[in-house]
Image 1 (cartoon, rainbow over the protein chains, first blue to last red):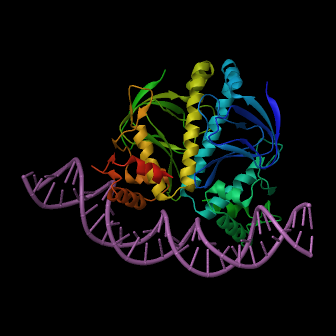
Image 2: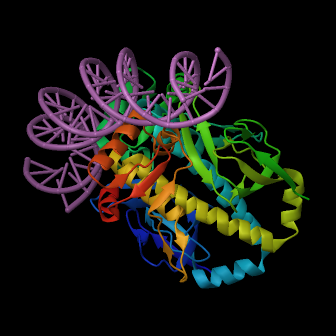
Length: 203
Length: 203
DNA sequence: CGGAGGATTGAAGGCTATCAAAGTCCGTGG
DNA sequence: CCACGGACTTTGATAGCCTTCAATCCTCCG
């Protein structure tokens, strides 16, 4: 029923204000959901990783663009088909509900960050978030945060995620590096040298 | 199965970090969901109006306090009971899913506001939002935004909703009044005099 | 080597926060 | 009825964080 599709890094999957007729599942890669103002300011309102759900079932259009950050593979469904199928399969709807509730939780804690945190708190929170996202699931159920990882975001995208400018993001990274809290092996890579300090800075 | 409960204005229904064992439906009144930092900064992450759902079914705690803004009446359920009941009634789960998706949409557009809008854009957006929230559903399916309404928020709460300080909120209100865009019959009341201007200012 | 896009760095300015004080509204009690 | 107290709001002055504007620097590829 679903159709596989490859999306190259930078390529859009859904356009803002487009009456999106598709929903999708991420198989591989990372995608961003964004909204923009008329004058070009952009805010990333969600990030979809493998196994995450994309799109807006049931009715209204979602008013957000979806663009791949890395080369990605997704499984696309026509929304009508999906809606009908979901209504006939309560297990699927339940799964979808759990995921949506979890996403709402994440989104709400991000609101706290956007509305009340300073630039350095935002960066620290972001780095911890990434570190946990890319952490290894050890033998136990607990997951060890990654000490070193590659960001799927450019500096501009980090700025769009945190509600900052690219310059502020850059300056904060530089400062954390100078203070020995993180290392920056390359543009896209981050190494957490002092996790304790990050936790304190995250506020 | 549910239990009616009255909550006085200012009274909490759920505490942050409390392992909340309840979910609820709002019957009457308005409540806020908030998260706070250790040092006391607060962000309102959601507002629940009559017919809205409160709490976090299925698993994790929601990490948000719920406090009544006005005297309110809610219908409270033990979460375990609710979870079980929901799993046995797909229609209920579907309804809940639709509401959760809608709430996620609203939350995401609020992220845009928090991350990228200026104080005056935030205030204008907020006032339009309120005006529509308290609009009359005319004879048609279209709803007419309210020209005059009473805010369920204090100035401080407006600030916590928009990620501003109380002083900035107050100054923006004063300016809009001076510019003839709104009238302020009393502390809690707002009259929209020039909707067009608000739409422009909302960005 | 050279170009282009992204990233970093620097200087200046503006918007919003902070600190402080005065004003307003409202309920209570004399 | 009016004075008083307290919470909330408004207003003012100042400071600071982050943005803006601009230039330079990397780094990757053709």
